[in-house]
View (cartoon, helix red, strand yellow):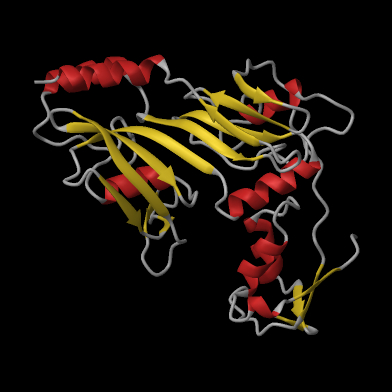
Amino acid sequence: MPEPRVLEVPASARGERLDKFLARALAGEGLSRTRLRALLDQGGVHVDGEPRPPRHGLRGGERVLLEVPAPRPSTLAPADIPLDILYEDPDLLVVNKPAGLVTHPGAGHSGDTLANALLRHCAGPDGLPGPAGRPGIVHRLDKGTSGCLVAAKTPAAFAGLTALIAGHRVTRVYRALAWGVPETGSGTVDAAVGRGPDRKRMALRPGTGRPAVTHFSVRRRFSGACELECRLETGRTHQIRVHLAGIGHPVVGDPDYGRPPRSCDPAVLERLARSLSRQALHAHRLSFTHPVSGRAVDVRAPEPADFKAARRVLAAAP
């Protein structure tokens, strides 16, 4: 068993929930929210000697004791999957993830993910940092989303990138083709996101979901559709897709949230279906301060052919 971990709660954490404090304090140590929540639910976290639930409010000055579970050995195998590398140095790399490639193992995918590809590309005696099943992965893109994704190669980079993302200090800019045209040229969606009723989809969950903020601006207007640039302030699962659907402008081609308007020309829909088989969402730009060297990293992923083709279809629509 690992040695118990002791944390002193600073005065600045007064009023903060125990689970949120721990998630922030342990960022970069490979302890997922799911495992941390299980530890709390099992009474494995003590505050001043007493087991406390996740929602326990802190006063500041307490002593928190917990046993951080030892990382489970990874059963992932390296896979010979080509990587489109946009930037790389000894500590990290940024790849252009193609649509259709799953970021890390899950239901139905165990040996054909980006994580498997990273293990082969970054093969070394110490492997990759991070929790089992997600080596080097500090954030993710949906299977149907293309573009920039950063991964860590060293523990220092993993901890640093995790802290940057948690602190909203990574600029993540997406391009999306969406149905309809917002009345204003730009705006912000500030709406909590959480699991939907079927657990496979996310939904707007005011009061119960996790805070989520997306800034958007119109890049181009079409007949009945538009191209948007979206900047994430937070990074929740399906955030852009849920937020745009929530304001009445779902992402074109989105299989979960993106029904086209009834007025859309069937011929246009048919041409779109031939051009695009996933949601028209592309992680265009990723920029941050390198967590080890301190240098500025600013990377852009070129738009894939299917995204361009879908844009041409919308631009030509009557």
